[in-house]
Image (cartoon, rainbow, N blue to C red; front, side, top):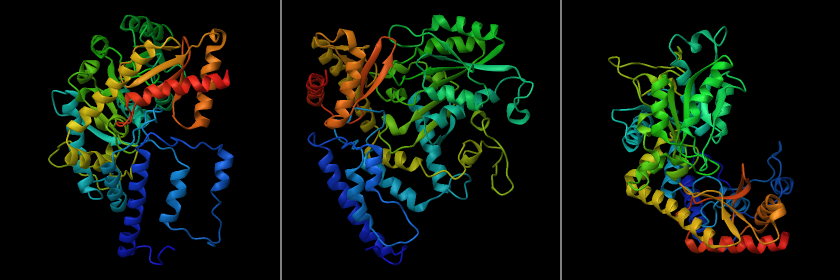
Length: 479
């Protein structure tokens, strides 16, 4: 039974040990390839297993009693056969650091509420600026997810338009504005445009090439199309990489175009900007250091718990343009007119922001940068190995050669040519029910494909060979 004193240090010590023991046993079991990645239950069936919270407190349950039930009903991202969404199985050290952050609960809007938190965040932003190759110190902050990150960067871009001050004057009597992005850009770019008041036509789509990368030769036509419809393009977004296929847009060429036309250049590097950590894969993000702003999700390729997103800005003052305002009840203060990095509430959507930098800072100090470089190379390499296995199999095909750790493929057995899309959907549903692997799907101009993202450092070539065999077996049962 739970202790009567909820703040008891001894109870915390005892319960903490029990919880860590449970999670350590869970990790040890999940690291193996046997067992299910997800023991799927329909939503209403699962809800019935979790009783409603009533007014009366008739049944009390300790964390040690609740956690096994929670583990059983949850998705197991540390399982090596989890190859689904772009969500990292977090490093255990990062999870422990988040426990410390949760207990301290230092909000970061102002320095006085989160002194160490703001200092640590500054060090993380500086480090990422060096990793990405910026030739001068960068400004920036951490925020809650890539969608918030893209919104923050594009709000700053809009506020940087010469002669316009939307933050003060609003959108009244302003020209219609637009952002250039590829057809494969993440939906959060379109969402950000709508939130910023640009409407459904706020994102003008540029074409992609055969590899689903933005085609620079189509940028001018897209910009002129916006101009002809009475809209002013003020920013351009490059993907590094795209969510659907892992394609890296040609950032150098986009940077050239942005400079030529005076556009803000934003890179959505939520997933793939971490390629900069690897000398072998850094060419994929060549030109990222020329961006005005970059988003990096640490909960993807830096193996942090969600959500930890960095927004970096090139140029003094850029990071404060999106949301800057003063409040009498918040103690923002400047020191000798220095850029006030210590008051992160000046620059983010959040006011009460958790100490999200601690996980990354603590993991870097404990494990070193090499751990992250190795992880990027291992997962990117394995995606290429998997593509090779697919090419060698006569009953499978790849949608495109992988650039990152994302592989889109489909099963093409003889006799299924008339309903390949339907077959992939049935395979995906059967795999969800089976639970031995977890994969997702995506829709491309050439049809429906199964999609894997290799996020687990323990996933092996053997696991991927087994995945192909599982697809074959499940397809035979649902044809």
